[in-house]
Length: 236
Image 1 (cartoon, rainbow, N blue to C red):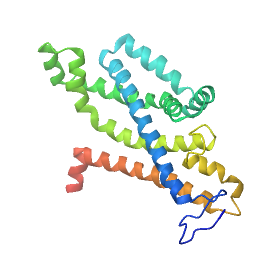
Image 2: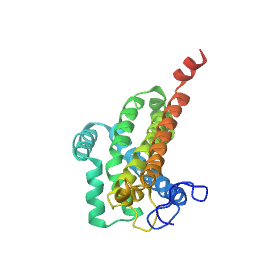
Image 3: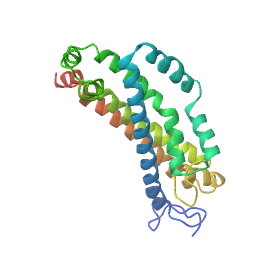
Image 4: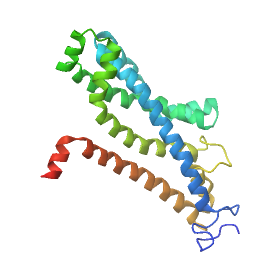
């Protein structure tokens, strides 16, 4: 039952080993969601800490973080950093998450820094400082709740980029090791059967495309929902 086309028994057909493609795509979705959510959580956590410190204190700390650290990471493409890290440490889910997080935290840190720079001059921050609140309390209890909207939107859109990056790494053989199903690994395995069994390429590629498109739509919807001006314009 190798390389069977889509049928009632196998809706997406079978691969070169006779395995059901639909089952592997469903299982591969768990890998993509796990890696994507872990990368976004790790990069967002690191970006929140670094961006909050740089934006709240400013001065030399801000210049060092923004000019030196962030620009140093931005000077290298994130995917190249991930490839170098995984090639050095070896494939695996944990190494893949760490590798993709190394290049993904800068975007969140810059967003958080800009939001904190604007929020730290607001009246409620001055009032909390006048009441004797510590810097940590001011950031956690007063600033972060007021800047969380663009961060949530960025995280939703970042999920799409993380899924695409995971598929790219798996396609290069630097993702989850076989025989674990992964969309990128399925695309890599199907290259030899591009013309005699095109369904091997089509269905994993469609899975990646729809996942990335869905999270982009979710990010746009969250932006419109969380922005009061957008809700007012929609109501009008």
